[in-house]
Structures are given as C-alpha cells and as structure tokens.
Image 1 (cartoon, rainbow, N blue to C red):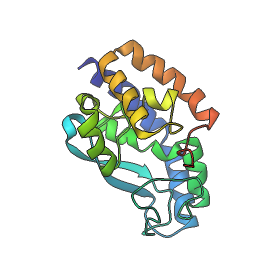
Image 2 (cartoon, rainbow, N blue to C red):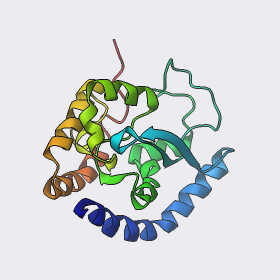
Image 3 (tube, helix red, strand yellow):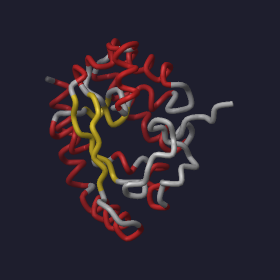
Length: 191
C-alpha cells in the first residue's frame, strides 16, 4: 500500500509535467514514419498476470522481426532515427507512467519482459513476479543488458527479496546516471 501511494505521488505529477514532451515526441514519431506514436504489447506482471505495456514506438510500423525471437540489437534495421534517440535516452519508456497510474506497473521493479523471456523467467526465477514490474529497477541500474537474461533475472529476484522504500529511492536516484552512461542498452554481441 505504501509503495502504491508513493508511485501515485510521483507518477501523476510527473505525467502531467511531461505532457508537452509527450506531444513533441508523438509528433516527431508521426512525422518520420507511418503508424501510431505508441506501441502497446502484452507483458506479464504481478503474479504472472498479463497486462498491456505502453511505450513510444521506436521501430518501423509492422516490420517483421528479423531475429529468431524478439531480441533488440543496436543495428536492428527496424529502428527509426527518432526511435534510436528515444531508446538511447530511454524516453520511449516514459508512457509507462500511465501503467504506473493504472496500477499494472510501479516506478521501480523488475522490467516487464517479452513473452518468451517471461516464460523462461517463470520457470527459473518465479520470485520476480511477487512484485509489480517497474519502469526502472535494480538490473537497469547495475547490469542493464550487458549480461545474459539469467543474470538480469537474478537481480530481479534480489530486488524482490530486498524490497524497501529506501531501496526504491536508491534505484530512482541511480537511474539518471545509468541512463547517461549509455552502456548496456543493447545485449552484447554473441561470439
């Protein structure tokens, strides 16, 4: 209950303050490529329940995935110019403030995974689903995508076990530095 209240006290005013930025980003996306400004996709949240995550669209609309399963890479041909900037700054994630307001996400928690990753995580790291997914989290402020999925999931479980308001505050304070470092945005290339 305390975490939910803290989420709302931050997310509602932040969402209102960022409305002008949301409008500028939406227009930039629409001017560069056809399709909607927002991308909505099913993910798994608290208790492994499905929900819809909302992001700014950073890929060409309705382009087939060139990978065996959804895995973003820095040289993905589907990423638009605006999308590349949005991903590097993580601005594409800001619409998830709406998910926080709606209650399907929290400001801090394990990042919501695509379906194949969720299925693997449910089998091996089920504890991560004992907390709401977050816009930022322990994994994003420590290892990001520079390590494999299992190592990121280990951080998610560590967060679920150690959760406190103080830990959330520490993660929120470390998030800007993690964004500025730009390291680990995409998975490291495999040998």
